[in-house]
Image 1 (cartoon, rainbow, N blue to C red):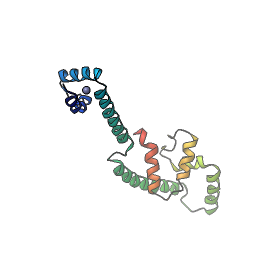
Image 2: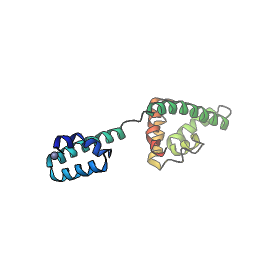
Image 3: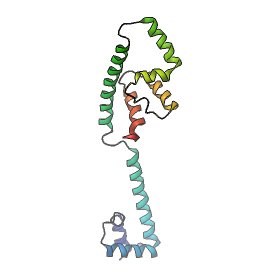
Image 4: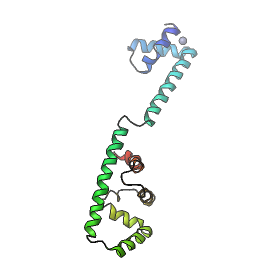
Length: 157
Ligand SMILES: [Zn+2]
């Protein structure tokens, strides 16, 4: 086979789409011909780059998941809030103020209280817990919050 012919088949060769006989011929040629070997290397690294880029890019479902997550979090907020209201059926301003101070001092404890379903407990340590508390400052169901939790939880799904 000529170099031209070899190089036209290189991408099929990388894809393992060639017949064994052709693949063998190309392998033999690549051992002898630096030009074609170089071409193969160029194609391979271009493909590696594309694959890497695909890995980095959000999946096609990213935005679907993100908007679903926003809905979910809005619901969770409402559930958490009703949980708090069940604990404190009557407004107790002094207690609420004390809880606020405690919340600042013991963000961890308040976090646990606000995440009764245990999702808060699943976080891997204080740093993450503190980060979650920081993001509690975001408006309910905000894009930022949903985005953040999608990023932190994405690996576990
Ligand atoms: Zn060649």
